[in-house]
Image 1 (spheres, rainbow, N blue to C red):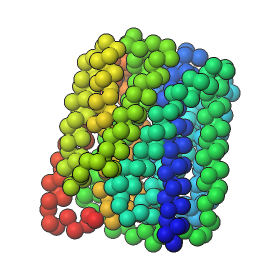
Image 2 (image 1 turned 120 degrees about the vertical axis):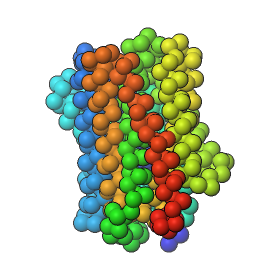
Image 3 (image 1 turned 135 degrees about the vertical axis):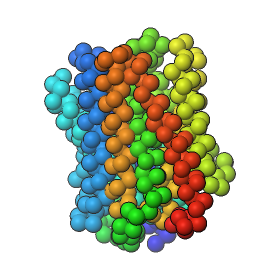
Length: 385
C-alpha cells in the first residue's frame, strides 16, 4: 500500500507540473492572439473569462463524477482539454471558436487541479508539505513556460499553441496509467458527507480561495499585456514577466514546505495577505523596468504559499465533495477579477483596470484575520486537523 501511495502521489505531482505549463501558457497565448488578430481588451477579457468558467465548472464536475465514473474515467474524459483547446487556437481568429477553446482549457485545468489535489492530499501524512510541494511542481512548469513558448515561436506564429497541445496530450497519457480501481479506495473513504457545509471556517477558507484565485489570475492573465501597454517591457521580454513571477513563486513554496516553520496556518495567511497587498501597491506604482520587475518578484514571493496553505488548512475537511465546492468558489474569483479588469480597462484604461486587482489582495488579509479569530474559538477549532 505504501508503494501505491508514493506512486499516486508522484502522479499528482507530475501531472500538476505539466498543467502548470499548459495553464500559464494561456496568459502568453492570449497576448499573442491579441497581437495576431487585433482583439480589444474586452475580447481578451472574454477569452480569459471563458477559461475560468470552464475551470469553475470542471472543479464541480471533477468532485462529483469520480463517485459515478471513477477517478480515472473522469480525468480521461475531462483531461483532454489542453490538447483539444490549444489545437483549436491554431484554427484562426474567430472569437467564438477561441472562446470554445479557452472553455476547454479551463475544463481541463479544473479537472487536473481537483484530481491531483485528491491524489496527493489523500495519499500523504503531511498536507502542508505535500500541498506546497505539489504547487511547487505547478510553479516549475509555469516557470519554464515562457522559454518554451518563445522557442516554439521561432518556428511559426502558431507553433506555441501546437507545442502546448502536445504537452497536454502527454499529461493525458500519464493519467492513462492510473489504476482503474486499485488505489481509489482512499478517495472514496475521504468522502465525509456534507458536514463541511455547516462549518463556518470552511466558508471563510472558500472566500479566501476566491480572493487568491482572483488576485493570481488577474496578474497571470493581464500582466504581460499590462507591461506591453504601459511600455515597461516590450516584445519577447514582456513574456518573461511570467518567468520572474513563477521563479519567486517556486522559491516561496519550497521555503514554506521545507524551511520556514509554520505553526498556525491562519496566522501565516494573515501575513501573506498583508505582504501581497503591499507588494501589489508597489507593483502598480513602478513604471521603470527594474523597479517594476522587483515589485513583481516581491508580490510573487508574498502570494506563493497562499493557495496551498488554504488547501492545507482544510485539514480533515478535505474530500472530493468539499473540493467540488471550494474549488468552484475559488474559480469564481478567477472569473470575475479578469473580467472586471477587462471592463474597467475598456472604459478607463488598462492601468485603472489593473487597480481592481488590489481588492482581492486586501481580501486575503481581511479574511485571514477572520479565519485566525475563528480558529481560536474552541467551538470551531475541533474541526481542523
